[in-house]
Length: 171
Image (tube, rainbow, N blue to C red):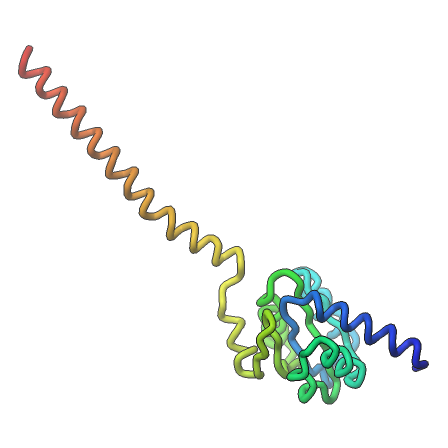
């Protein structure tokens, strides 16, 4: 690869990494082109890009961005699952993919600027998604309000019943 092409590739990787909310480094040894294409298709559904990188070029990009902790994991066949929106989405897709194809493995991850080793990156899949977390928060806020409204309605019904009983008594 000519030097100018290498420089362009480093800039491309640097641009992708700088915008990323999370980066999952994977080892795709033994995977066929069809399996990689299938993985990319599944990742695209959740707005995640998957790029196969040359380790030397990825190390240069990581060093430029201050992500040197990635460098020891940039050995062997390396693919980067880069999420720009939901930082946990790549983890779920990768683990769903691993259920059918045992060949894909997570090496490490960077989540919102924090480096995660293999075990921590694997544990991420258990965290609910952004929409689910928002729903849980809204549900937690709405529950006391629903109880308050129900309580106020019950008191109004009792008041109407008491006023009606007083009216019937006076007649």
